Image (cartoon, rainbow, N blue to C red):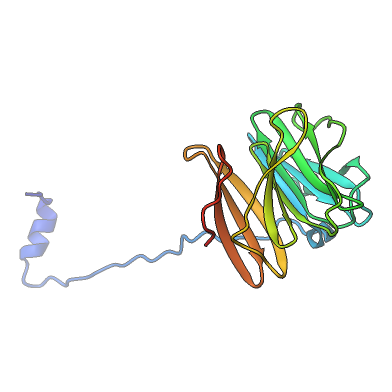
Length: 222
């Protein structure tokens, strides 16, 4: 049983007491606030965190593949201080970025509709020579990358490419879903399940599919 002070006890027993209730209401919901706006928001961008650092990538209006390094999110200029890494991209085309171990990977679309990639092993300070993943797609694809794998949405279907040895290999295609009007693709690696979780947008819908990281077999998309 919980005890109360003698003052409270006397007040509770008093015939002249006036009961009262106090309610405190507060709104603790988190809300977004604008930090910075730039015309780069009209272009395809991707980003990934490496510890407390945020790496960004975009293809600008001239086809330059550019990166920005954000070490302090409150410093507005860092979000839009771009450095060109290669100038062979298609203007305002899709880009992908991911971190696997200590390796940053950028995936982008080169003129001629080739999907290309560059990597960095020193937190984005320097980047490798571009290499081709797949070429001559016939139209600008959407791209994503995670855990060393590259996902390409082209011809309305998603393909997954990896580099098990010296060259990039098409491992499988999600044939169970074909989009008439594709709008984008994103991917993440589920290390606990050994699966790639892939989100595909198009035809006014968002689909989710799973690809086995060992066999590259796809589950039925939702």
